[in-house]
Amino acid sequence: MKKNFSLKVMTLAAGILSGAPLAGAHSPSEHARVYFIGLEDGAVVTCPFTLKLGIEGYGIVPAGTKDKRRHTGGHHHVLVDVDGLPDMDAPIPRNAHYIHLDHGETTVVIDLPPGDHTLQLLLGDEEHEPLDPPLLSKKIHIRVKE
Image (cartoon, rainbow, N blue to C red):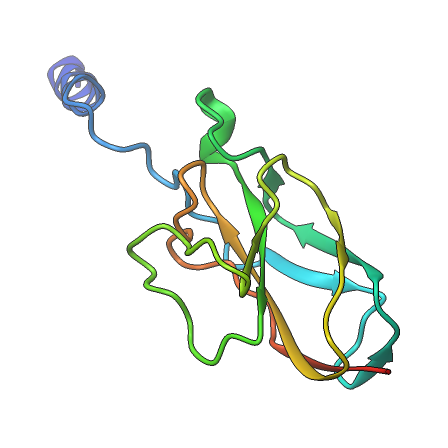
C-alpha cells in the first residue's frame, strides 16, 4: 500500500515539475456564461447607451494579469456586427468590431450609427485569446434610433 501511495505522489510531483498545465486552467465550467444585462434581442436604443455585461460561474480579471487569478477569470470583448467568430486559437482582433474591456470593466458606453446591429460577448484570457471552451453569449440584434 505504501509503495502504491509513493508512486502516486511521485507521478503527481513529476507532472507539476514538468510544467504540465493545471487541470481546468482557462477552462470555465459548463455552467459558466456571459450575458447582457437589461438588453434583450430586438431592443430599440438611442445612442450613446451604457451596455452592462454579466458573468456567472467564472471570474473577471484585467488583461495581462500574471498571478494565479489568470486561470480563473478573463475579460469581456464586445463583438459588434461580426458575421462569424474570430480565430479561437489567436488573440481577439483589435478593430471597430471588437471592443476590448482590458481593465476588467463590466460596463461600456456604446455609440453606434442608426440602423440594425448585432452584439455578442466573448471572454478572453490575459493575452486576449478566447477561453477553451469559448465563453460566448448569444448574439442579439438591436436597432439604433435616429
